[in-house]
Image 1 (tube, rainbow, N blue to C red):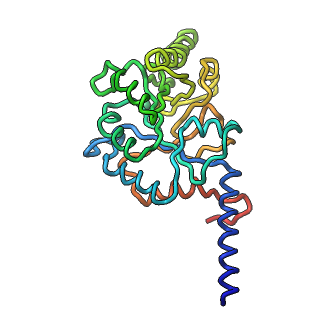
Image 2 (cartoon, helix red, strand yellow):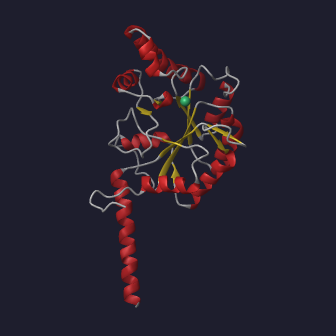
Image 3 (cartoon, rainbow, N blue to C red):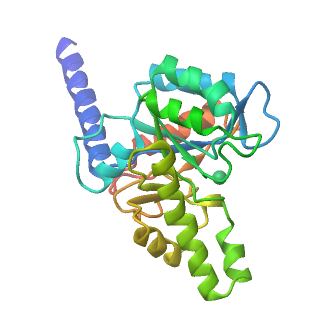
Amino acid sequence: MRIRHRLSAAAALGALLAHAAAQAQSGAVPVLVYHRFGATAADSMTIRTSHFEAQLRYLALHGYTVIPLRRLVEHLAGGGDPLPPRAVVITVDDGHQSVWSELRPLVLRYRVPVTLFIYPSAISNAAYALTWQQVRALRASGWFDIESHTFWHPDFRQERRRLAPDAYRKLLRQQLLGSRLRLQQMVGGDVTLLAWPYGIVDQDLMRAAADAGYRAAFTLAAHPATPADAPLALPRYLIGDACTEAAYARLLEQASHPRAPDAPPR
Ligand SMILES: [Zn+2]
């Protein structure tokens, strides 16, 4: 009986190591994207703050480690230290006021790194948006990385239909390079990551982003990021209030325990 116990413990350990090895090999990491936080979820882009906090608790309780997006980008490019098992990334798009009022207190309490993708035209301008002072304070806290979401969040598909080729090229440069330079000037640091507005991306846009100095860019294709993905079109999971705990758990589980190529389907 004791021997059988020992054998099954060894088998369990073996399975665990195989899992860890599969993850290390695949390098698959889920990147989550949120937008707004609030007491109620008035629209599909808002998550209740209490619901978001429950997700942070879930991560902590189930052995997940939230890593900075930059660390994942480094890893996908083949550099940096190995990632911890069950690595997850949190990003937040658009620079809404609730980042300051709702998200910031939780980030400081749970000590999780977050990447904000913001578009400079709204900051200290639109009533719903953060101010430059707030953006700088978020960065100074050490928990927030500030990156680009273009200059004013255009719909590139629409703009390409609307504009002559030269005017479209000019718009791309202004939106991609212009945003980087403005953020670097107003906030500091090196801005080299980009979130595509509405997740819209094509080969042309990827080339323009590379020309403008971006190392990595993110879409809304819902699967874990792996080294096989194009660096300028890395996937993210859009998370809203409708994401139940079961769906959240499933998403994380599938991302961190990818099926080995020779394993039967499950
Ligand atoms: Zn956006």
